[in-house]
Image (cartoon, rainbow, N blue to C red; front, side, top):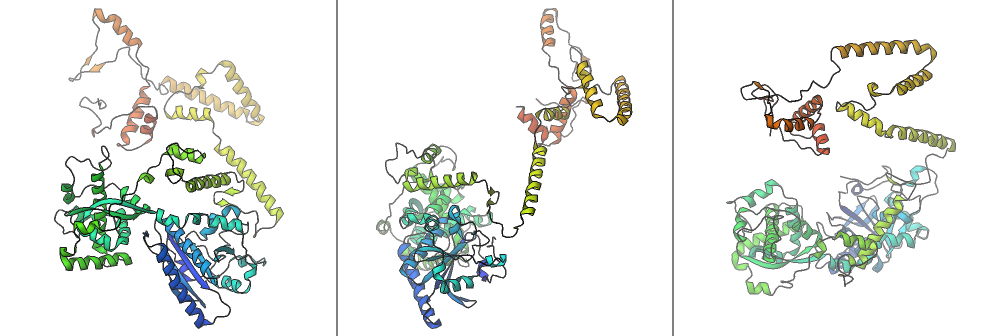
Length: 629
């Protein structure tokens, strides 16, 4: 779990320290100098009702990924305010929808001040990173960003030179707004960047919904019609499925809440994130669903694409399986929607199949036949490149289709321009853009010494990582048992003499005698080893190899008189192979036991693929190395 950076003495509340991943948190304050505690409490309650009503009006048909927008009264450290946390899961659009709702709320309530943040901290400032003042960093921005009247305000830093004063507690920020509102910083550039993603709202709310026809059991169709938002936890249960939750579905005898019979085709409302999570998963057909599909149907991701009816059945099978896994644990789930689903299922079990809708009743449901295009799932990377260059494809006639969307163009260009700006920033390091100001070290002499040390270290690193191709080639040949190209025996006399002359120039006079003794000793050792054949790596080769037959006797194959010429040609075409090298490579490959290793990787780079040696004996019946065809 990630937490926000904070100062232990800054007086942060407990929820700042316990914010879970993929969650957004928001605080709503009513700042009215004339109101007492009782009046403030009444204003907060009225604000809470207004906020929830605004959310309901904007998100009537919206499908939240996990948690919905919610508010509760909080009284902590002498502060009275409304507090909410929403887990948005993989749907980042849920987070920006909440920012839009909060901003709209501040425009209609002039006394409301809002602070919103997530596990990344002040994510609104992350959006505006290119235009922020240098003093504003993740270490200093805590509790400084506020939304009021639809605008973005920043609490300025204190003039105090003490580094500890850079951190700002929530209570101090609220007190600053109450007493020094005119001193707050408002920049149109920062605001435009921070609220850039809100420009597509409220239209984005409807655009993020996807309707798709699916074939599901009639019981499930009734549940989805009664509780449409239950599709979110059901898809997540399918998306995060595990073997334990799949057992009842894969079983042929376990009772099911939604058995695959009495199937109907209806339109289901998803968010685009939920539909992508459902559709992208490969799922083998459970035993009790196999009879519902046509015979000879290829499994998902195998064979040609299925027809429309089969695709709807596959989507319905996945969705039903998700509801089956959700229903098994819905009663004790932390999700309010899941608990509501458990109540609907209990009522359905009590009423029986008489409560299920008929085909005629299903036809009267709104958007029952709606099936939106799924083209947004497909990405044509050639079109993507053209859009980055500002060129539109000829097939895109509407400004809202594919990458031809004007908003999509602006988003893509913005991403690329920001990335290029970061790459071109000489002050940017591995942790992001670095500040010019140094609050903790103002000593110029110390800084200059550090810079010189860094330059020396950099030069040393460059020398260490420099790559000598000739040295690398020599080392590789030695590792493989090949003779070095610059071996002493093949050097010309003038080169040898030059090497000795260079060595004598570098050697101090007092050490020449010692070096000469070492060279003489090395020469004697080399001569003795050569005499005994220790340095001869290649065994003597015969012009015609002897092959052993099954009886173990050597049979020198002599060519017939008519084949003498062919035999001579074969002997000329024989490849001179280093026996020791081949043997070492094969033994190294065998020692890998079929796993990845240096020998296998080296041979693979040379285009040689050897079969796995599964002969445990390692020797054949004749005592030689085992041989595989």
